[in-house]
Amino acid sequence: MTSLPPELLKEIARHLSRHELTVSVRVCQEWHAAINQPLWEKVLLDSSRDRDSRFESFKKCVVEAGALSRSGYWIRVLRAYHYEAASLLTTYGSTTCTEIARLTLGSKSDGVVDNYDAVRLLEQSTKLKGLHLSGQMIAPTNPKYEQLIAAVPATVEVLFLGDMRHDNEQDFDSDNGDDHDGAASPPQHPQPLIPFLPRLTNLGILGVAVNNATWPLIFKNCPNLKALRLDWSSGKEGVMALASAAREHCPALNQLLLFNMTADLSGSSFDEVWATFLSSSTCGWEVLEIDASSNVVSIGPLSMAALLPRLPLDQHLNQPLHASTLKTLGLGYGADISSEYVRQLYEASPNLTITVNYEAVPRSINPAK
Image (cartoon, rainbow, N blue to C red; front, side):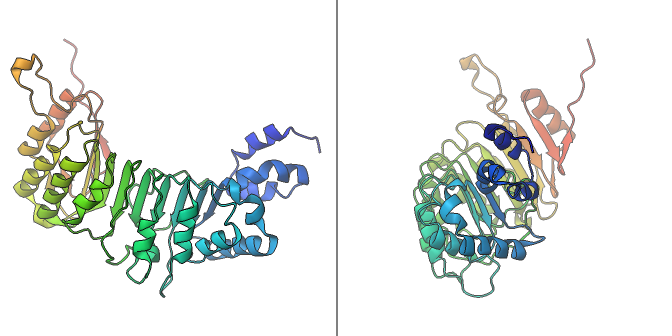
């Protein structure tokens, strides 16, 4: 076999699938030395097709071959949906598994999951930027739920709690073709009292109930929050509380994604509440996405007035506030907007894309004059 430079082998490895990497690393010692790093950069143990067998293979590799002691420092992305994963990393990789940047931990165990090892793993992950906790990791049966949330390192920029649907963890790294698992929403758990996270820009809380009094406490600890996605079922009072807390504590918030809006915000009620929330932005909205559980969401005149307010004439400007910022307005199933409002938004926002039922609404073509 003709020898290839290690640099070229590493570049080739970055374009291979997980299966191809696993096969290639066994070809010879030369290939193993060059390909081992790309193989370990992403450890993905959550494929819905073969999660259990994949985890058992990883466990054997770690325990019998001592792989983490040699290669743990290469891990940058770890996704594991097994309650023993954190224990393996803290037991066999306590000195090497410190470079993780993206971490997903979950568990479908029916029993009590003591997340002592998950807490330890977070404490040693001093370079962590993205964290997703789901399943039994944040269930009420977990006796260390509060300690787990409190252990989230201040380096985190993206934090998801609960089952990610719709966007499918789009802010996390791609997985080279492995499947995401559609886990069921976790049950009610204690209030997610987020610690002080000065770098946090993206927060997702799905399937986790948050009472109205908790939002100010969360937002105070996330002063640089820009994107918020929620599985929303708290109705009118909840949206009002959320808007008030965001206006006071999150001046940079410009992306909002709400899913499963409920029927108590129908018709004019939603229009009024939504307009109040839209008016809370001080930097201009960039992304707004709404998905309802039934036909309850409709962009009305009050919402339009909030999206396109006119500045005082004495400022010599008469342009909509959001015309230069709004890039995406997404209305999923159960949400609607009239064709006239679509036309007005497109005229005012040159960079805007509007989607209804997840299909883009084309801009009208003005005839040549």
